[in-house]
Structures are given as C-alpha cells and as structure tokens.
Length: 256
Length: 62
Image (cartoon, rainbow over all chains, first blue to last red):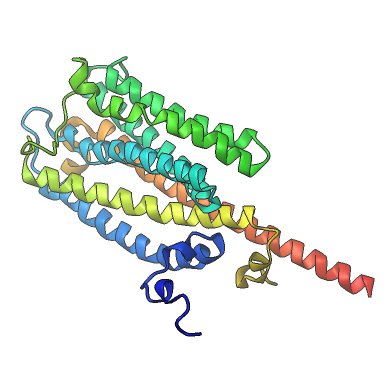
C-alpha cells in the first residue's frame, strides 16, 4: 500500500497538485509577505543607488535619473506580456483553469508597467528631445503594447462565461506576442529618435557600473512587486471564480 | 554628491521631470496595491454575506 504513488510523494514540491486552485490558494497566501519584503529591500537599495551613488550624467545632467524607473518599467511591460501570453497559451493547451487565472491576474499590472514606461518616457523626452511624444518606432510599438493589455482586459470583461473568456483572451494574448520583439528590436530596425539599448546581452554595457547596478536593483524591485501583487490578485480571482465550491466555503477567511 | 537638501530636490533644474516620473510611479504602485486589496476584501465579504444568508434561511426553515 505504501509503495503506491511514491513517485509524486517523494518530490519536495508536488507541482501537479499545485496546479489546482484549491492547493495554490494557501501557498500563494504564504508567499506574498516574502515577496513584499524583497520588494522593499530591492526598492530601498535601488532608490539609494539611483539618487545617492550613481554619478551625474555628463550630457543629461541630473535629468537622466528617470532612467532608473523608465528602463525597469519598460522591461517589465514586455516581460510581463510574455509571461501572461505563456500562461494564457498553457491554459489553452491544457485546459487548465489556474493558468488562465494567472494570465488574467497579470494583465492589469502589465498595463500599468506599459503606462509607466510611456509616462516616464514622456517626462524624459520633453527636456531631452523637446517633445512629450513623437511617433517614433519604439514609442509607437510600446503604445500598441498598452492597447494590447487594455484589449485583453476589455475582451475578458465583455464575455460573461469565464471559460470562454479564457479562450478568447488567450488567442488575443498569443497573437499580440509578435509585438514584443518589434518593441525590443525597434531601435535597431528603424533609425528613429529613441536611443539604442543601454544594456546588451552580448556587449559590455555602455554606462557606468553604478548606473547599471541602480537599474538592475530597481528592475528586481519591480519584478518582486509584480509577483506580490499578481499573487494577491490571483487569490481574489480564485475566490471569485470558485465561489460555488466547497473548499472556498470552508476557508477560514470567508467563515463568520 | 548633493551639498544640501534643496540641491537634491532641484535635481539640477530637472525637478519637474524627475519628480513627476518618480511621483507617478510611486502613486501607481500604491494605487494598484489598494485596488487589489479592495477586490480581495470585496469577494471575501460577498462570500461571508452568502454564508450568513444561507444560515438564516436554514434557521427560518426549521
């Protein structure tokens, strides 16, 4: 009897079991404080480096410090879209509820990151280029990314049956993936106003080490924030969509 | 690097641009957190209400 099913029991974490909303819900709840702690840790270190360690820029003066939120927000807006599309696609292939819920939970924070990327870009472009907005290839493709997020959210909201909304929005998310490499390579493919990449995977970064450190710390802060907020939102979505089930009714937090 | 707090807040003449970028960023991150918390609290209180209503239904039914 004890020999049965020892394959999954001997694993440290049983990933298949975690794919059910009822098993994932308490685990997500335990992880949230941990990711908030990391958010504050990286955030405090990142802000300190951005304002007190990184030297003033030779060309742009103190105005360049916008980079410490502009670049992380832009990275996150693209990265979250890829993760969201991956969850949506996984939900479509495996017909798994939790995957679709993860995609649903990632869309709002992704939209906020795209908004922040555009907003901080505008407030950086105005003093440096003399314009809040130009129809540059990168700016335009980033705006399309924001519209893809909003379209994903709106499409979900317009379909009453959540399972059908999962499928329709997954198709939209997967089609929109084509935009991410367009944003990323736009500064190479089209020679418009936006500057080239400051950080490259293949070349040494064209900036001071401390500037790079500040950007990486802020990016880690945004990343941990995204995970924390997404886990909180996915827990709310699980309760909303599983409200009729017994396990939700047995939860401590919903009992009187 | 900064000789006085006022020099820090002036950001070398870029105060408007730097502080509105960081300010809005901070505001959005706070707002997003509050919205998520409100959504969670709303569903929990709805579920509580439903359970309460069911209990009353049972008590009246008996």
